[in-house]
View: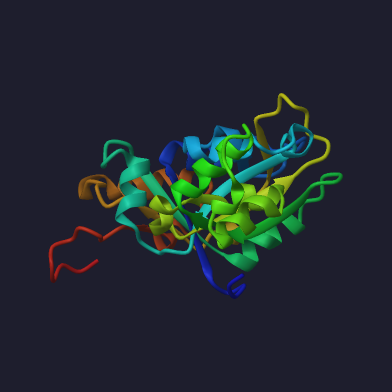
Length: 243
């Protein structure tokens, strides 16, 4: 893993970010903000679901995950989440150490966490892996690195993705909660945004005339030092224009 001082970035809709302030945490009403992970089978990529379908149900049912990136600014991530600017989005900036610290500060039975980079493998190798379970393909034809990833453990399957997504430079936060029921879709824990989040950046399509309103909105929901922490992406600013 990279240095604990290195930064991670997570893009989400503005609504999801506001929910971090407004949603109550697990059994607590005193925490002002939270962080929520979801079941891996809820992820969008059908190939990730295919990989997870090979994992023993009694193991994978307890895992929850969340996607982060090591890339500070990404056109593709902005476009994917914002639907090319249609949906208002924000990007939060957190250090690796602070994200780990937020989990260590919260104890919930047998819950344990992993923070690790995603391994990107060829689509053909995933296809062969899927066919092998039906007895119609030989895993020997899968490349050595992909075979190590696919056959190593349930953890590696949760950290595998097609090479088509390699530009995301993704890091995944995974939590295993032995107390979670099979029906539970999300896992929420107290996450102090004011303590851990260093920066909140709005998407590059945010109208300039709304910027002050958004800063005020985040201040009202509980973001401290909003005028300093809130920024606006300059990805598409004209050359020479100041931030």
